[in-house]
Image 1: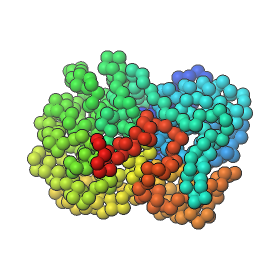
Image 2: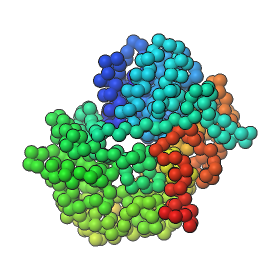
Image 3: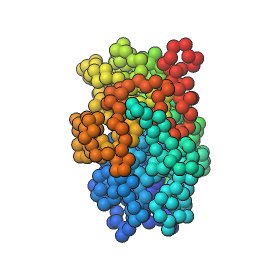
Image 4: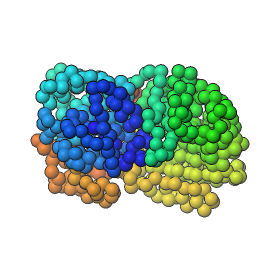
Length: 525
């Protein structure tokens, strides 16, 4: 059974979920059923596997409820030979699975194209064995992490000292697996019931070459990969357009595909008249009048670019590699090409940010609006959240970010710029889930339906600090660190990180080097 921690309309729009489901469904030795929070396929008489795909931190705490609804013990330690192997994957779990680790038997670290076949093959090899034998066998597969076979170690003050295998013969570290094939992914399901109705999604690039210091989508998915135009992208587009006239081109930096201009001009042919094309966020410096013209011709009304900040100083700190001139040019080119709107993504609360930097973002938007009359501007703003496996993983959420969201709103909304802030409070909960270790698992189990409330999270965490929560069965852990230390604390480079035993594309030493280049005066860039 393959679950998604949200409704069908949201889950079926996830390209990652679609690909995992299709990969399993193509196997003759697997009978896969889908499960969403509001519906599911008919359940099998007996379930051997229960899988969950996670791409968003705030979805993870739905897992205990999904397991309870299927009458599966929520704690891995309480499952027996007749219970399914509960496994999970996706960027959240690849970056730091530890807060959810006690709920999972297996976590797949990396790209499903490689991991899923290896995982299923290994499971089939020991299918008749007892549960512990199966888990030990799976732990030998590269990229397969079995949390029960690794134990966190704490000192007398409750500080994490390491996460070590509990048996000989297990790898000391588990490395993320990276798919390097010539093709990436595209939709296997097109439905009017999806959150993006009737759209065929094609992954144009994977990762991003820009390496913004805060960005999980860039650092965790390195290296930057691009399918070929003739063997990868065009066949994927052609296949989808037999079923729908809506096409979505996806990726963290779509327009940086070396053949993107060729793909765009191929889609400019008359035979694609009536086809509606949308692209995900594009790098501002790659916007051209031609891009605007072809997207407008193919039904797009606006373009989205990520600027992060209107301050050139802040963009240098985060390694954005984007000039103010390039942002102005993107707006001019979008209008010149016939688009009616430009959406910009910004961020507040970045390390070293001041009120002046926030004001620079407002000033930039107001200058853009004045310089390109008739173009509709939208500013979407999030709060910086530290992500595991990125250079800014040692930095905390800055409390002043809440006021800075309001400061931005006050400056741009009265001037006719649509302002769409993400909740500061939920950014705090994201950080809690992103930076915690296994001591958060009892909090996740206890918060239950109150997970929809920020107050519910804080109440459950206070209960953990006072020792009021039921511990993980058979595995009592020290109390978690103070809330502010996890969420807001700037951590020393010597601190043992909860994900120390897991390896992303770059070693911790290299991430620290990138961190210091951004934030430590006198460090060479």
